[in-house]
Length: 464
Image (tube, rainbow, N blue to C red; front, side, top):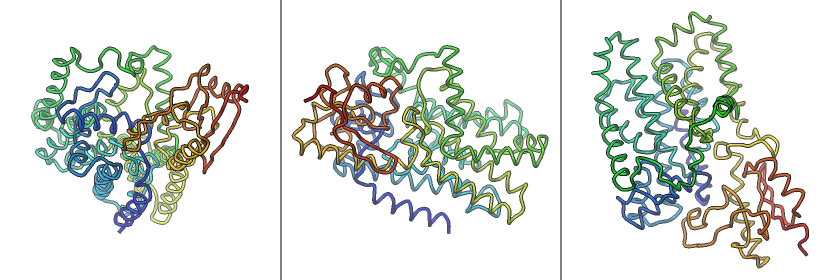
């Protein structure tokens, strides 16, 4: 019953967000590459240097849908909605495998996690990644190695991060075969490896094609985000570890970790270790965490909450399973309800203006779409040319790529010396210096606010 209620509520919420444009990294990671393929051909997936360098499966999928059904925002929404429903279904299947009396509660703990519930209603390729990751986990647990090969191949072709998750699943499967199923290493490897041959061949072919076309396996010189793809210094690595810890605890997720600690204390460390060693989900969680850490901690790329969405789901399931072992029926229902309330409240954990937030991972960002349109309307009413107005990420993409139309307008990059107007929002996650500058050297002309989101139009202090 719970899965159907969640599906209906999701579809209702999705219906009211069908006018929402692309948001955050999904412009560069989904809208722009798909538009490029639509214009230049489905197999033109070595993109220009200023585009993302990702495997093309998700982009080709959207480009095909736009070819068949027309290029518009509604089709883009529908492209992800199908996978959103699939994610919800796969989470339910995982919950059923826990063999507890509290499947519905555990299911809600997973799907109401703020990052997952927010991503499900965005036009986000991370939903496609999440679907194939969860499908692969279910197939892995069921030892359906043939279908696992297909699912893992799709997972690896969604994005580089998808391949990293896929590598974690392969490692986890190998450990499960060795530790739980008591196979020798050779037997375990022969048993597991064939399921991951297709993804290795497909990714290898894609890398080779890029090398032949561009001279580089991955990022070409001049890549817009090159500074985010470099090896981190020791101080930056420490900063990344702290950032990862914050990601794991933020937006209400601290409640999951607190009750995980409670469960460990109640059952004892020896029993907990024994549980982990014999828990397939725990082994998968640790394996994916390991591979994800290898590609996030040592590099300069700032990572968002959505990077770890699969880990959030698995941790919620593992924690709930442990709690069901240490609490009696009446108490555990109270615990689960309390955890759910804290997780839902995590959508509204917004800090001071100078503390950054992963806005694509909390539902409280939703007013930004109507505020953006309201600000554009205000500019038009005031006869202010949009091209004379400056803005920052995530509002500075071309309107055509945000709204999927023929509108060629775009807010210009912020230039403190040359900009005539600046739109400032708490969505920007600006550094302290920029925030101080906009408050001290610019004059507020118009403010729009809804919920926890604001958009403000500024002009220079000496503006007449």
